[in-house]
Image (cartoon, rainbow, N blue to C red; front, side, top):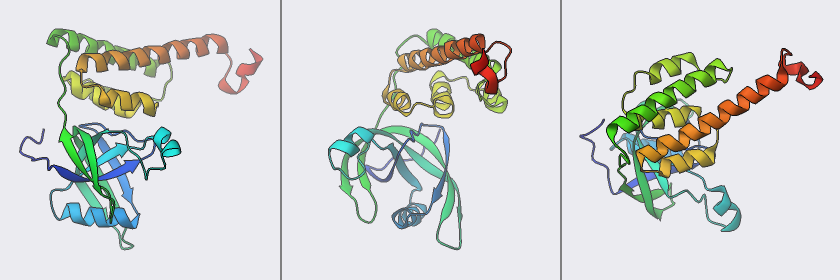
Length: 227
């Protein structure tokens, strides 16, 4: 995707808590802070690109750094933007590529970072990655069947995504609730390993769902303590 887009050496960056952004994913954002309003005006006037990084809570509590970010993030491109009369805006950002944040160039009026694009590696033969993708499709469908909040529209869409890397990135972005695991998946450049890690997480979630149903029996959720 976006093969004709040149990634600058430096881009603006947002650092957000509990948000791990992935390539190909679509992220709706509400822009209301003055610094990000200025950032939005600047990027809309140029390349429409900025990075979204996950705030590192461990460093935030220990180092005294201003909004310390995990070193691996995603650069996205603004696909749509609606500016409001009060200066706020709603936009849709689409992930383009993983990047390493090399250094913070400045913080005023918003964070500007030097970045290096990262490229994934297959990690295994194509047939093996396709097999893991198919197995993950089955696991996600089973998770939905067992009552997990997985929208049918999304599972139907995933079935149309043939590329294993795109598949696991979109699935992790939308279906993984653990920010630490999501950051690990973002940082894992080996696609085979990324598929394995997320599959293991989904299997663990399935085991928990099956145990919950076994303990619950035929009782509704609000009466499970009577079992």
